[in-house]
Length: 321
Image (cartoon, rainbow, N blue to C red; front, top):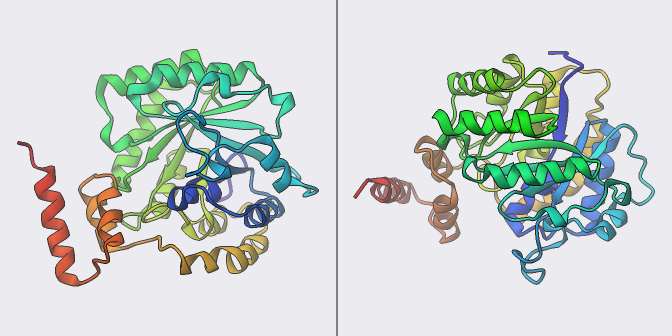
């Protein structure tokens, strides 16, 4: 599908950092950055810019904070071409004073991640970032747990009170099916003016990350996310290389992505496992955060009867009392 208006965001380092508390070596991050730029992907998101008041620098690595010094080490003399640099700020884990003026930063776009309950914090953060000269996106997380009037009000606020370029449907738990993707994209479009785009960010708990991203594109999403080899916490994300193959945009160059996957991403699979696994599938079907599945697998549970016990455990925990 060739639609030149579609913007692709690589969030390999940002989303992948949820597996290892953002402890990636600068050399690896630079390899990813260089390759994504060479592939001519529109944006590369190198991590979070969250508050050091909320995250310990002893426990979390550089890419939970994206200090300018670390970004400059990575960018170095790499020619970014038309690729822009992005970071994410969680509305409930960062503050407006964490935003420095854009003319003092290498960052082009700030993506504000929020839950509906934190929308007022997200609005203030987005407004500050716009005033400081950044492009803005707003990502509404855990969308499968949101709906009704509170989501409607949040979308209306984002529409009228921010200059967001895109507002994202984020399937944090990998629980959505195609008809639900259609529902949410339609709902966003009802509340978002034409000067703002709808974006989609999918997780792969039910092996639908790529398929649901395609469904979002079909419904008109013009901002789409992916990660190299689907790297990300738990079941991971929509694979960036599949997404570029689907889009058929001649500006994209797949070869640099294939190179960095082989050289830098595949070796990481010896340390961390991500992608489709039965416990992640179970939490996806049940519309639950994958934390219980991650803890289960960390405890060494891998036998078939353990899957049954895991299912019994999480369904028992999920029952109302």
